[in-house]
Amino acid sequence: MKTSSKTLAQTLNQEHVAGLVCTAPFIIGLFGFLLIPMGMSLYYSLCNYSVLSTPTFAGLKNYINAFTADPLFWTSMRVTFFFALVSVPLRLLFALIVALLLQKTSKANAFYRAAYYLPSIIGGSVAVSILWKRMFATDGVINQILGTNYPFLGNTRTAIWTLILLSIWQFGSSMLIFLSALKQIPTSLYEAAKIDGANKPRTFFKITLPLLTPTIFFNLVMQMINGFLAFTQCYIITQGKPMNSTLFYTVYMYQQSFEFYNTGYGAALAWIMLLVIGTITAILFATKKFWVYEGGI
Image 1 (cartoon, rainbow, N blue to C red):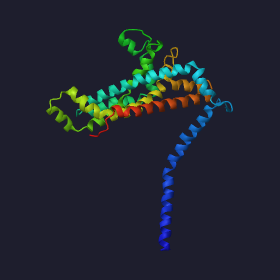
Image 2 (cartoon, one colour; image 1 turned 60 degrees about the vertical axis):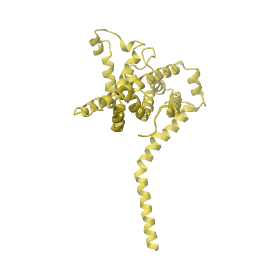
Image 3 (spheres, helix red, strand yellow; image 1 turned 90 degrees about the vertical axis):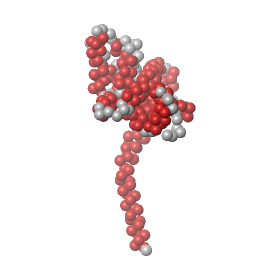
Image 4 (cartoon, rainbow, N blue to C red; image 1 turned 180 degrees about the vertical axis):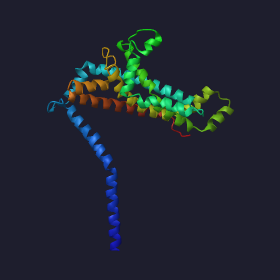
């Protein structure tokens, strides 16, 4: 009996050690790359601090300055809201349209899916941003096609739209999620609707769209977060120019932290954006019950 209890204890101990070894990479990564940096960022946001100096506690000074003494804070916030609220719905719309077109079984569907998904993989890269910048330059391919010499990136009214177009072009990931959701809708529902005499528009708005609302909600939340955190496109293509008309919040935060060496203020800006994203996400979840169908199929 004692031998059996000892063997059981050894087995449990071995399983405990094995569990710790397997979870160690995640635990180390969670604390080393997320929780500890977040704690340091929160502390720095309450300090007067640059990379070259010792942090000195300043309370809520950085937060107060952001809201009361920094006009570029409000400019970057306005530009970011405009970018996210325009680009995200358009991206989801294009993703849904393409998913509906690819819903039919075809030998070429695999190629089209890969082709439409590819921009989502490389769309956030530096190389694509440089290519996009050259396309919309005064001597770029867009002006050559139009036969003009228009400064798309140098005009305050059009520069932001070049970044929005690049964001819309990256609809591949949402498209694949929509396509997967469309395949989960039972064909029997469409057959019943056809027997009842429903046309395609009515079928779409009465069957397809309601059953897609959970997927639309998921894509909306994820893409809205990505929209508010967009960085590479702006930093590479415009760097906030002309006249701060494309100054994304993340780019301004980066400039304050690493170009102007206001690291404490940059950390405060990061926490403000975290609260903004959290608030928007909470609002989306609060309104979910009014338009998302959760009755099951």
